Image 1: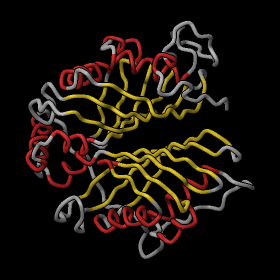
Image 2 (image 1 turned 60 degrees about the vertical axis):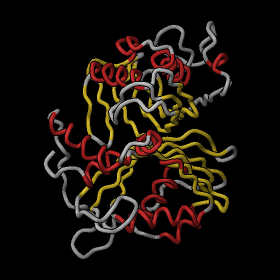
Image 3 (image 1 turned 60 degrees about the horizontal axis):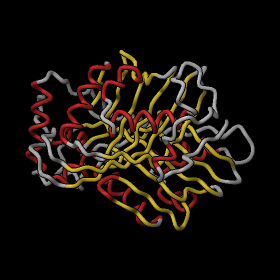
Image 4 (image 1 turned 180 degrees about the horizontal axis):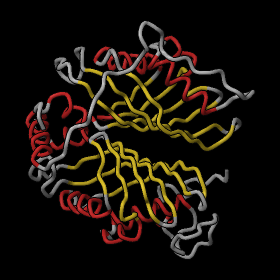
Length: 355
């Protein structure tokens, strides 16, 4: 795979410089996009920072599917409406592209994973309440499937709870109000089944041995997720994670070292002790010598059975989608960025039972 990086990162003038020659085949894309990273960064800048909201009509499929922990948003008009609402609430927002990890080509289509830091002042009405005037920072990752200049499917994992807390609203009141709004708008809750951790009295599923010799980064990531989360082998964290490991995650958490990460995992397992982890999609860039940058989209499903950061146990089932970027070097995780929507999770755990 040809590797493209964010050359000029931090210098938006260089990233968006016109007249550059193409470095990648981009059949079906607008002529000014030189490669898939440029497409993601440039169209995001035009739609959000230049307020070219109408460019959504030429950059999103008419029947685009947008997946979040809250569920499915369908159709291009819904994307336009959501963009207008967000820009009205945060009209001076800036979206900083921290990373784009990608795979594919212009024949089969591109998969991209865009990690974003979002900075703005809340001077308009948002979904959470009236304007507060506060400066806020929100982090998140947006995954897209792109073909011939159109985003045809998207998965979004954002730090909504971090944003809500920065705005200063009363959290329980907002959660209850958002859940009521969903009910009034006809948004149905997800259908749940009991988590299938094991069959009968058996043990969790065992991953088959890898088929290739040497280091296989996909097998490494999938196996580590499965063994730590599904087998509860937290002792394996020392095998998979570097001593100076650093994890950036929701609500401005920065977990320094394996011990902090282990405590984070234990907190979630204690809160949701029957949880199951499913890896939905993976791809990576890099090699053994320079290291890898990886994208993993995953979901957790379980039941709120224990005390923890999400309030007293409610006994309710939940679904949580998240996206992780990892840096893997010398056979260990050395840094991670993981984001998921805790507002959507809290609505499931504490919103009115009939939404």
